[in-house]
Every structure is written in C-alpha cells, then in structure tokens.
Length: 127
Image (cartoon, rainbow, N blue to C red; front, side, top):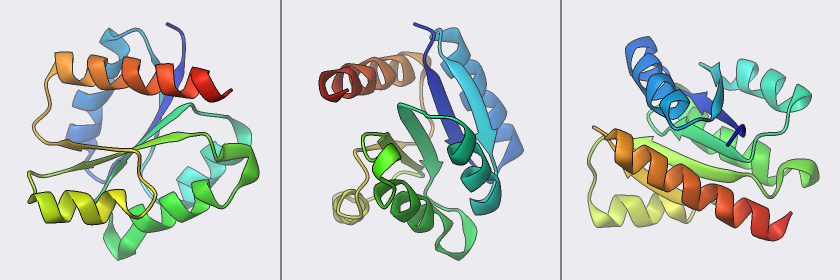
C-alpha cells in the first residue's frame, strides 16, 4: 500500500499498539503526541489519513481537526477519531466537528485495516 498515516495519541502504549496494527496493514506511520508536534508533521508531510485520540488534553483533538480543515492543502485528509466506547450521541457530536470516521477502543487488526483501506479509497476518489 505504501501510504502514510499520522497517529496523534497521548498514551505511548496505545500509540505503539496502533502503530503495530497499521504497519501490519502495510501503511507507513508517523506519530505525534500533542498539537505542536502535529503541526510540525503536517507542515512537512501530507497524510491521506490522520488518526487522532479524542481524549487529548485541552481540546487538542478539536484543535487538530480545525488545523486540518482550515488548511487548503490538507482539506482532503481523512480524519479518524479514536476514543473509548461512546454513546451514539457522543459519536454524532464528534463527527459534526469535521471528523470523517470514529473508532472505539479496543480495536482489532481487521477493523484497522478495513477502516484504512476504506479511507484510502475515499481519499483517492477526490485526489
């Protein structure tokens, strides 16, 4: 596949697990842990897919979404929110912020692969 995914997560163990799952699906991975490192990665690389931990401190996830959606060069980026199991109302509220997809933890390898493949197909349709 050879496409890049940016993961933004506050938990190093969760990030390591997600990196392993994504790499096993034949995607390249870069990581960030906060808004500053996210801005740095996004300023130097394009990512068809960004996975953001919705529990980042200080509304960090919402800031990431605003940063991506507000940048013409990044507007086609497929954003996936990652969170603990949530109510349908919570998921709907997250999706209304500009996120394209929502995944609840814990996640399986097959779910990650399927979501990434779907996201890439959507990205390729509009590029």
